[in-house]
Length: 500
Ligand code: MN
Image (cartoon, protein in one colour):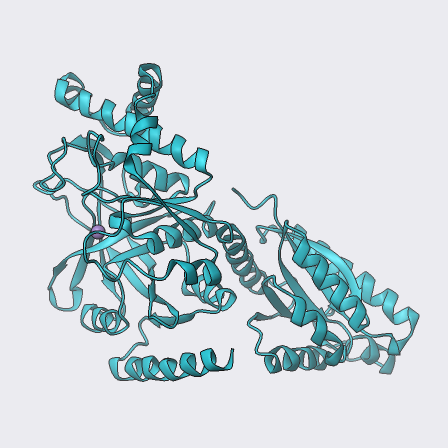
């Protein structure tokens, strides 16, 4: 975890036409740019300068090396001089890592008084980057294009987003998702083609019988449980009355036992995400609520009722957002609140909402659960922060995956005295009527992966790298335009499939 083990390569395009002095100057400028990027404090992943490339051979060798270097999560290209793009063809055919084309320039402003033809021969990114861009487009290769001076914080912020996404992408390429139980009976939207998901998104989805977890659970010691319960007491609000309530104490201990077993099982199997099924809990005391909440906060992807796609997407969104302040969660569209312009959707689940999004210290509670037929589960109860966020889902359209993203405005929620679960309350942009209608027309799930910290730009970069469809619902969305986009995409992906 973390970004410190990753690196992004910076490759400068040039050619030998302008002589040895030009090559030396290009190299010196590139070094200075990379040093400037690294010392800006704005980039989460270190940039490694890999030299100038002046020929097809050098491009191909550099990109092949990038493919083979596990630490390298992406490549930034920049054309200092004019770099004829036929020399990039073979290298681009080889490149398997995410690509960012940085359209920048060594000098910030035009040196009006001193600029001569030697300066122009050396500083050609204005047209050199267009030549390169043409070839990438001609080859139908997805990439992010960032335009801006390299010392400009806004340009650096766009690179930073792409770096976080590229790290999330690298993390997803060996993502093992463990499912305890299958999909809930007959549920469609949470299912999909697991073979295609591994081909396209990197997810490896495995089933394990709950009995395997029970075997681990039975070996958890009382000392381990005591230590974890002490952590609960530190991190959550627990009243004196609760501490004296034998039923509460026992159910929290059982929840701790479940959490220790789950974490151990996932860690032993090298899994980054998991799903549960409340109909498949033989040998378990209670539906794991608290455990799922806490494991999500640690970065394990979670999806309820067998929802492996949301589990994986949560993991990726958590990974991208590491170190950012407001948090993320698995959520479900729970119930609607029709209130004119403020019409909103209560977001919750039976138990499993990630405490990273809590606005106050969560309360630890034990209550009966009217489904699943197990003992009373422990859960964290809280309301969530206010502010803008993104809700996202990946659905399987049969011939492709579609990423649906809705910008949402989280508003002040209320306590639910008779429904003790964690929750959030949001207005989907542009409003409930249009936002929810668009989501339904796009075929979106009732489960989402939600983040306060990520913006649409992150998910757009992710969809580009993955090569999957993406539709955005925000304040600019109208139903008639959105329907047209869905129809156009239908044709695009049909043709795209035929061409591939
Ligand atoms: Mn659900």
